[in-house]
Image (tube, rainbow, N blue to C red; front, side, top):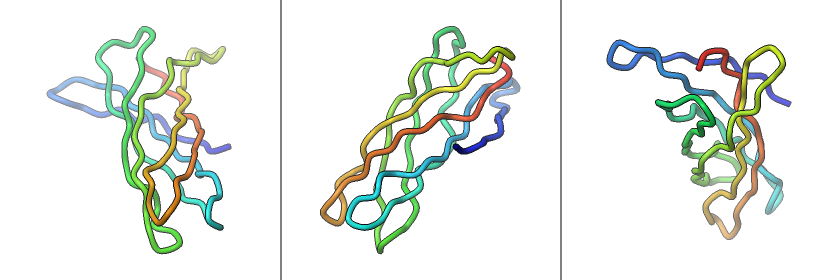
Length: 109
């Protein structure tokens, strides 16, 4: 399991909430990649989701692109929340990779 810090950004003078994420892909063609980044911000925090996209780490001589939308918030007893992300990378070098992970928790909505 990966641990992630929450991230608050200022945009046009106001706080927006985003989540960091980092997870490994499946092992295909003898290797895996890391999927990591920061989600897009959201305006509405009740039942919200985040978009995300990026490029995997460079492994075995190539990269893959990934993108998607997180699941809805999963709330913890302490009032924080996190999101699940899952998907398949682009087809590069004759194969794809699958990934599943969770964003870091966010304490403000």
